[in-house]
Image 1 (spheres, rainbow over the protein chains, first blue to last red):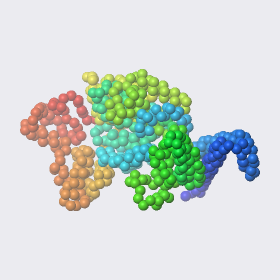
Image 2 (image 1 turned 90 degrees about the vertical axis):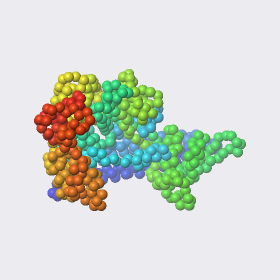
Image 3 (image 1 turned 180 degrees about the vertical axis):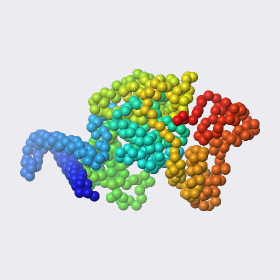
Length: 132
Length: 481
């Protein structure tokens, strides 16, 4: 193999491995985010069910006792932020995977840029086409 | 879970029958669309294969919707084989509908309706379904029933994956789902967040040793990985015909299976077109025109050709590939003759790919591939004799001899077909030439024989069709060079 062929191969391998690393990191990130989301949800549940006026809540590494309502609001805001992050990671993932396929000279996944159908539209189709 | 069950059934019952073209896996082209001599089941016929490769590339790019391609050539020159190769090369994503010209003459619907349905079956619409699902292994379930008979049940379920664990409070309805599916600790389940449906995927491997005996239906699956709440996006391709059928009657899907769809009104089709275009504007759907392959297209009559002229100009039209082996023939429905039995104005819109007769070494390769496909080991001398037979009579006759010679060879308890077997089946089974010669000699002994005297002077040429008075209309002459 001539020098340029070798160089080209190394370059391609570099790029694909870089992208692949990013994709795997995103996957891990999703798991971490989902963990936080579930914990926040559990906490919100417990708080709405409890009767105390004031609850203990951890902010950073501090334990703080504050009013239930305020604590719930804090958690809700947290929850929204986490959802936004997760949506961002999902869209990033799609772009990265298509870029990766492009580098490997494969055609991109079809239908990635499609918007999903509304729930009732899809249910109507599914009810009539059992193979869907 | 019903969906995975369905998918399993489909895989298991996919028995591939050995058909005349089942050895073809693609067009056998390399990266620059040059045809390799023997590849993917296709042999020789380089120009036609290259042309077909260019067409496949254009269909993939979406650039020739509504165009027409004609594969014309003598009988046994690989026209249907090239069409099958194109279908394989396009893959499962692009809709490929294959039909024969005579199929449109059905008593249940008019010819133009049959053609419209075939055209709509070849246009795919890509849509996406997005759901959030919770997938995990059940660690424990706690259900509390109120002591006072009636009342709401409350419950708690703990789900885990390999990396995280959490618990959910359950409401009454979902507790009923759980109890209906008989979910216990150790089961791997999915819960659809939007609809609240619960599906059991199976039992976790780690709990396989819990009991000494489990039911016959128990399936073991791995504990899910990653996050508990996932977003699932699935891209489906439906054809326009399927959507038409749904909208043309209430129990549409039954009609789809029984094949009896009846006529679909044009208003319904227009509504569907508008809806699909609307979806396309909103970015919710993609139109994916496929290929409609009409074999024996000379059987279509003048009405169908006029209909096709117009239908191909609509903006939702697939690529139509036609194949015929007729030369200058009468167009069905008229008394006029024209090349291939197709009116000249339609011929003008087509790109024509020519297939030529195979050379002897190509015939040998094809026979070798068919021997492999039909599980028959042949001695090289037997193969040479078979090739001679193929060039003297016809390729199809020689292919028929392969399986028959294989059976004769097995009867004498050998594994390899040799020249004796081939000679034996050659004497047992007649080809078209010998059969017609015998008919001419003994015509008086056959019933209803009306062969006239003038046929005595007609030369018997390999691959040529004969004019028979008793056969009725339909002239057929060998392809003119």
